Image (cartoon, rainbow, N blue to C red; front, side, top):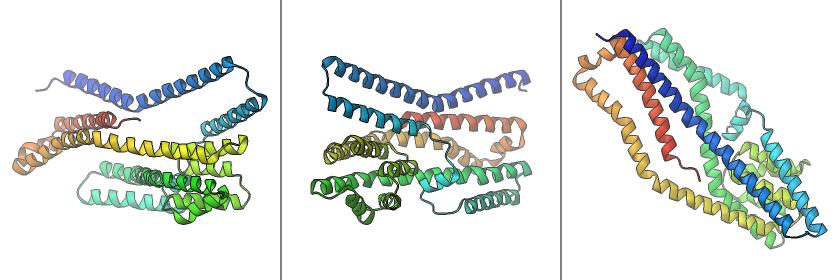
Length: 330
């Protein structure tokens, strides 16, 4: 007979460890990002101080430097003042041209179908109700995030080629608008549709810097942010746009090569994590097939149900920790 007090303490201990693991997985990336941002700002400030100590800059250089700093401050303030994403914005990021009302209707239908299926298979009304909530609010939003991430990866692959088109066009004497129009007509999706939206906005009088800022809202990746900053600085302070975009294209291709190396180096770790994560489920499935009476105690006894819930929570924490370990930041 299991001591109830010992069982209660064990559950509290496991719950505390689970909450700590989840907090570590989700909070540590935020803190590391804050530290990296602080280091970058400190390095920039140190560089400005060193430049000032090295000598007095000419008046034109000081004016240009001030224009660049003002542009960067404006872009940074615009980036920080982003409001919470609306459902319409998330649909645009996922590349879905559907009304918000239709998405809500589809989500409700998905939840009702999932709950009806579980209720028909003999599940309790509580489990069916939870399934309705998960199918109505959880799965559709996870699907939006998955589609948005896949679209961003496709954009990154083609974006460097689009920058090369701008570089060659500017070097040959074409205006920037004509280069953007070539990208909107000749490149593959989703770069084609994003630059087509920029051309449409510019045709109705929207400044190019704001058009690229809106592109960054639809495609929130650092590569687009870099491109918007380069174009905005070139419009405000002048400079060689072809050289700046050529350097940016080389940086993007270098990031892609680094991404490929990281994927190759982490393939073994991901395979090991998949095997470790699927092993308990495979063993349980084999036991259900071979000795069903032995395993069914987990579903019929209260202690067995508690063990299933605790094991599921621990497996979830383990998945998050392994995901944190095999996803490298670069």
